[in-house]
Image 1 (cartoon, one colour):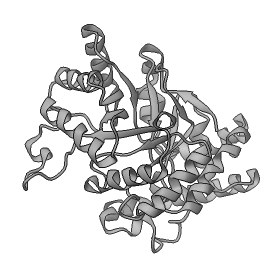
Image 2 (cartoon, helix red, strand yellow):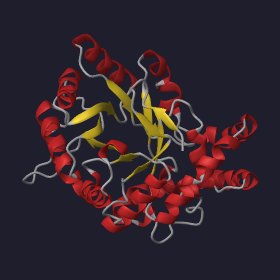
Image 3 (tube, rainbow, N blue to C red):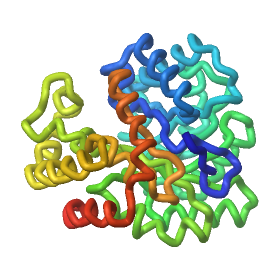
Length: 327
């Protein structure tokens, strides 16, 4: 396992990390989470990603219970959470009030995450989506104040536009506030535009780091959806019904079949190939993995050995198959 700086920040994160979206509470209980966190940590992973909205807060509860059971030295691991949608409060959601990144919400949301995770501070917090109804300046001040209070150490954004990220950074620069250091975008073989084009100038201009999510396109790049929706898969979950159409996209599944041939030549599977393809990008600070089973996590960790095998010639072949289908 190699470690990379989070953009220009001094914090070093493992090149592969472990997230909890969809899996924790829905597919993974505390016992299974504890086993997977332990296996990830033993493999060198030091960064664990969460969000208050995952499983309506229960994902953070599961992760917090697992951390408590493991009893690790707090200096040895990095934990993140994300804020935007808010949790149910007396029958009214923050989304309905469209105040999801205002100061009141953010200052209280971080306290809820700390309680659920049973931590004294978070290492990294994100604005989970942009909020056009709150001035960016108000959000920047609130995120900076959370850090000043010691409740978090760094902050960033997730699925923001390059323009909004730059605006937030410039506001922080102008007022001597804590700047956003990282963006968490979706990034995989079929979803590239933001990372490879829109953000291109931000890497050098402001030192933007990336913690990328969905490396396997929600499982599409594993090849398991080429024959339909298998029982027990993410696509079979009731709360994931909205993604079934994209998981069964015939053109993309045919492309995955072609990737399988390249993977076989390299002695790996398509999931490992897809993760290694992201990992080879020097702009990516860490690739966030998701796993519902210990065996799946261990298999994905095999991507580390595949990364050096991705020669320019191999990458060119992968791009010829996937780039025409990428967004």
